[in-house]
Image (cartoon, rainbow, N blue to C red; front, side, top):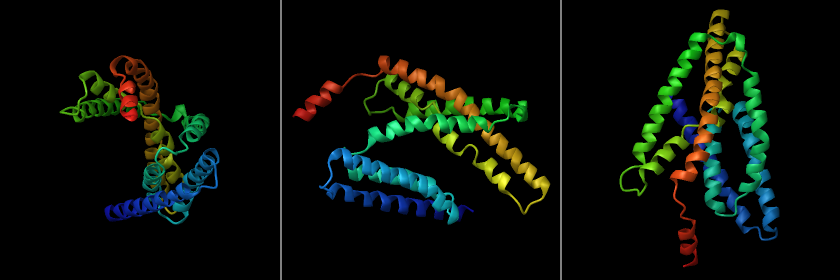
Length: 237
């Protein structure tokens, strides 16, 4: 299993790197204006993002899709530079967010939530967020030039957890429901695991996303320094 996971990672990385570097073809396309070119980039990225999970599912490379999409975006960013369809992607994501989170929330049946599981989920989240906060604060120290307030802000900015949890929180439950060649006892056990995972994902979204967003918007204006004038001056030079 460990070997196959490494194999899936390598395949996902290679595909993401290849697809990302292929995107450099847009840099050579001079027949389109910037607006039309960005729309074309957006449509290509959207098609790959939607089609890749289906392709990986039917070819049994389930774990490769996450790595492939991440590195595809990374390499596309590098080859496109400043000419990226960021604005179009941001608007599209703004539309998709309600559907993503509402579909995850609709999967939760409150009557099936075990109080003991819920309590442990909250405890693990508190411990995990605390460790994440401390780790972020520590790694931003040293001679990197950040103040204590800036380091604390970075740590608070890592608290919100929502997108990944909403995207993959129900996968275990879906796989458990799809099990066929197993006994009812085994299937019931996996369904229990799936419900625990989904509950944990939703609890993490509820507990971390709203407070994290509030902290980012509030502390960012107070703890971060504005260096936009220095950057503009550097660009002018």
